Image 1: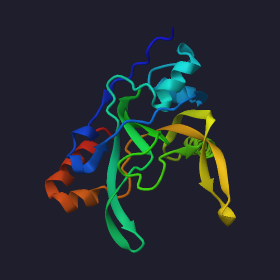
Image 2: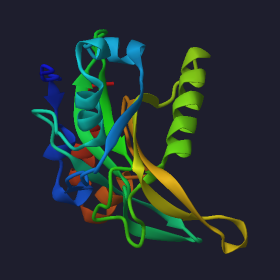
Image 3: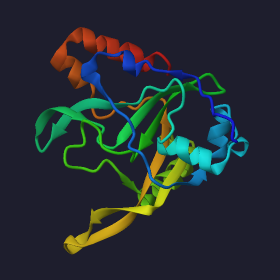
Image 4: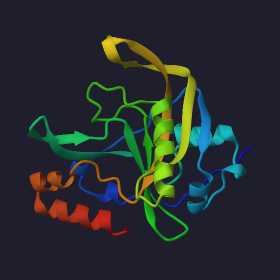
Length: 216
């Protein structure tokens, strides 16, 4: 039996006013398979993938098994769409698990992408395709190697028995494998969440600024 992965989570975003997020739970994945782990990033977070079974890591990084101390939530934000301000937007297919301290003392956000519907999904299914998650993994690691600050990918999990529909040119429907990516970055700030603070109250904006820049 694989031992349990332990990460020390800090959940400062969950301490913000409720207008900044919506608590959520990742949707269960029927047949998660581990496609790729990032060993160097894993080492920065204080663990080695070799110490755990692939099946266990697939359960953890698909969102099926939540790590102790995590408080999953979908971030709310606001911004301009189609020429006007949209005061209520949010992560429609991403789930922030919390902040984790790296070996260098930096705090980074750990997020699941493609983990299912949230309160902000509207008509979307909240899922991601395998090719888009792998593309993000490759491009983000290439940018990191070039010294360009960016998000990084910790793991890629796919359900090879589950498919999702996506439209392409000429309204053609494609059936593609569902996948979940695990992203990390100093701060997932979305599109102008400061608008929410302005819309609700200035004190909420000050709380958000204090929480989000405290660890960077």
